[in-house]
Amino acid sequence: MITFENTEIAFKSKTDKDLIRAYWLFKIIGYPRVVKFGKWFTEIALKLNLPIDGIIKKTIFKQFCGGVNIEDCSSKIKELNDYKIGTILDYSVEGKTEEVDFEKTTQEIIATILKAKDNPAIPFAVFKITGIATFSILEKANDIQNELSDLEKKAYLGIIQRVERICEAAYKNNVPVFIDAEETWIQDSIDRITLSMIMKFNKEKAIVFNTLQMYRHDRIDFLRKLIEETHKGNYHYGIKLVRGAYMEKERERAIQFGYPSPIQNTKEDSDRDYNLALELICSNLDCLALCAGTHNEESSLYLTQLIAEKGLDKNADNLYFAQLLGMSDHISYNLAANDFHVAKYVPYGPIKEVLPYLLRRADENTSVAGQTSRELSLLSFEKNRRKK
Image (cartoon, rainbow, N blue to C red; front, side):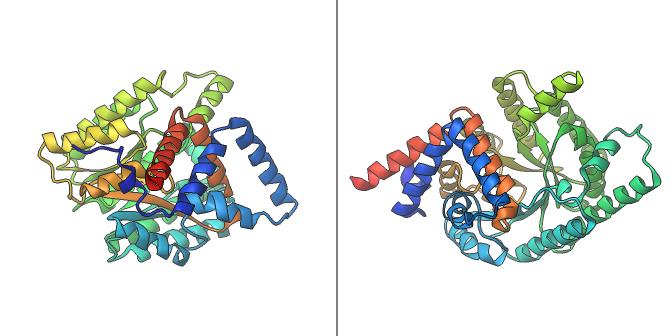
């Protein structure tokens, strides 16, 4: 029976210094007012070109990022691999709007695929379509009844071509690639583009993965429909299953524009649909592939139970768990120690460029009930265990 209480396994790769740094970081993140002030101060300091890069690099960057470039991540890739945990290199530069930046990001994503080629320590690649696309184009195209101008059609075609270049590189190099989910008002565009790539490149197995956010109340029906269509079609459908990361923004927008919120009424509803989705996917692994991206202990345990009950091969290439670097090591390392396939998202990029990602991590840890306190209790337990 697997347990996530074994902190010796969870933090075996961490030095005492690492534990202390992580403890104080989560301690600070536990105070919303401190996080809010820290975000404000950091943004002001960057605008004024104050020398704060060193402080960020030694604290929050070191906790949640692998390095400033691909090669800088090599030591983290090796460290994780030593404990049978894979790396998903995530180029976490956000907020670009120019074509030249979109092309640079496309080339960087393809570089992560080439880094993963023939390297079992890097089982997946990942990207966000908004990293290579103009948000407003995706938003307008979200409703298929909207007529795009000639200029917008050209921009939209450019988005599809960049996505296809990435997916083709993934296919040719046999590296599965995740396309991340984003806001609901662009997600239909993302789903349509992703499906076209799935139908083209997933004939033999799942290379392209779509991401389903189960804090949306419509995703169970979406999943049932895609399973039906996948059985009819001659392709495999890769699914990265998550709860989601845009809850507050989604609810605020729904109120602002006066439409029903796409978000589940309660956390319990999200948990129920997430676990139901796990069951549906595990019952259809003949045509699906799953990466369960979750920091939820109950869902992680439930998936291990499903694997056992259904007699599934926990070492199959189409069955993975995943967590973010710097978080939920008690889940990742204990799963890996029990021979399940596990990978960590390892964000990287220039410090100033990945700062939006880092600040979002701080926000999420502050807003998710119990996340920070759970991290703190585990770190405290391990510090005391080592002292004894």
